[in-house]
Image (cartoon, rainbow, N blue to C red; front, side, top):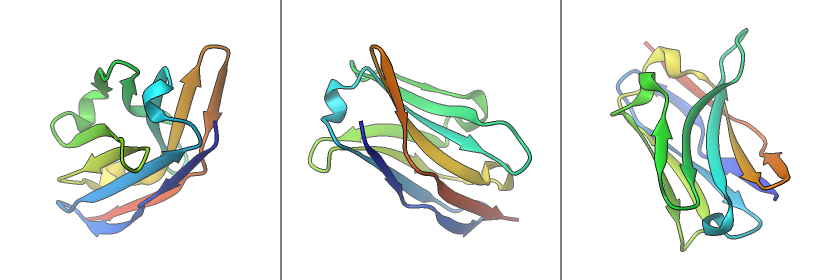
Length: 114
């Protein structure tokens, strides 16, 4: 699966950004779609995921602020990020998981200033 992430940028704390991940096959036929992030000097971490049945999961620190969803018209997996905090800063990557394979998109940078 080829993935193309977009939507990063710079915002002040408390602001919002929306990320999109376009896929080369239907996002509704991919077992698991995830958003990960990597802050400078830190390991990549899972932020949110949505499975083929639409079930979502979030890391504790973003619950209530981030929403992951699939857009049928655009064939994207979107990550709506509200009430952003400086600790949300990092490069965000989308990741697809199919039986026997997984793929990463290129990252998109999110910078949150205090």
